[in-house]
Length: 241
Image (cartoon, rainbow, N blue to C red; front, side, top):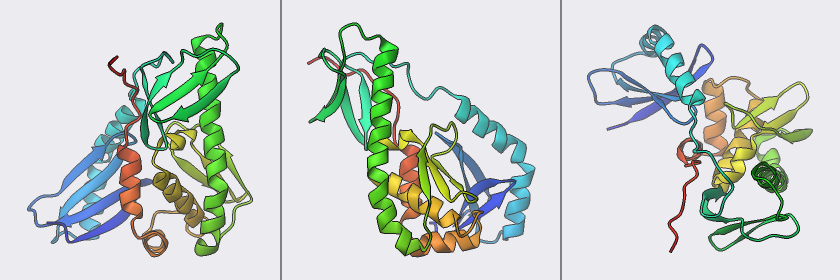
């Protein structure tokens, strides 16, 4: 049974530590981005845990590289029948309509309407632009809500595709960058990332102070973080019925 938790940073890697009634320590690396979690006996000190992590650091980094380099999504042909995600909802793509370029959601259907001569890459580019627009529209209300709570303000936010991060903070310019993939996740996850990056304007590292601030402002932040990292992104093909 878990009774306590902690957050450590070792060699620039954030480590979730959960203390349990177990005999031996276990280190796990989880998809999709290589989140590292340690299950440790209550008797182990933080220094002992850090030492064990350092000793397994090469293995941890190798596991993270493999996860981040893996193709976690099947190739999308932008054809009717595929599954795509919008704000955490599983939708069926329908690209059978032709006309002026447009993306819309109706029920469980994601409509991607394009001229009849559009190629696959053009349809994909249209959908990606739509995702970016969705994210850009969702961020300002979150900043308006959370900046007074956290006590920090950003000068700008940028939607930019990143291979290994959901978001990042540029302290010098007081800007935050957000991955457009967030528009595929539950809105709770975007809210967590916004608060996470605002908090980094106060504390740059994932130390105890950072965890204390996150706990104060968003008590369920770890639940949201896990939800973000575990939610599906892979495309599927729906059965025709």
